[in-house]
Image 1 (tube, rainbow, N blue to C red):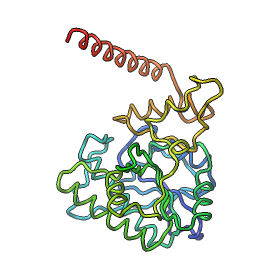
Image 2 (cartoon, one colour; image 1 turned 120 degrees about the horizontal axis):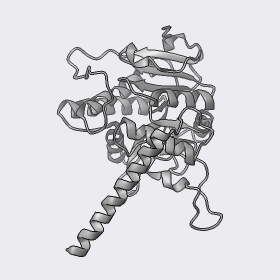
Image 3 (cartoon, rainbow, N blue to C red; image 1 turned 30 degrees about the horizontal axis):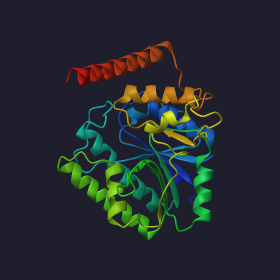
Image 4 (cartoon, helix red, strand yellow; image 1 turned 90 degrees about the horizontal axis):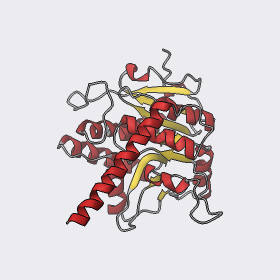
Length: 302
């Protein structure tokens, strides 16, 4: 397998899209990377620890790879299977995002867009975000937003656009230290928690700009794009991405992305909604309805 290093990229001033591939994950990495290849012309850099994790990725001249080497005393898990966000290993894995960003900036790249493996692109996100940085040069960080209470920001590292500056470099260094410190102490602290805390304690700096929720949605917003209209003629516009978070486990993420493809992006050919997935969705709906019925009966009895 020819794994070209990002140092082979000569145009450092061009935007690059970055992924972090750790552990063998079915469907998600290939679908996410393919969606970027389809919807942009940017080069893609994939950070990884083990070549075995790259076995099912798309082939393209636009793919480059950056091998990450854990420190000698790190607590990097070695078991090669998916870790969901209930496990402490998951939080230790995602802490390496910050280090990857720092390495790429040190190589000379000026603009990187990081996209999670459970994020599918539906539009040319590179052009949209690059243009926004141009018209709003004060905005050095554009980031997905899951905030419901403005007093308690909930930023999301599923999609983040970073333009190099001293502020951004300090953010990456501080967040990396905070993340490693927390996970090494056994805390289940994720990159979303880290960046949200940084944003809050820094006093909502103007150079960090949350992206609009409607066009860069998290998983919990899927129902907003339903074709069933409560009021005639009112429909949400098609989003630029979809992030399959807010569900636990690899299989649930794979199912959520298939439901998304059916509701939002029917042209997506990478995720087939086979009979197996339809049955799984039906069973989940039945269990959900059963749980609601039990709660209603309990309230009546009580």
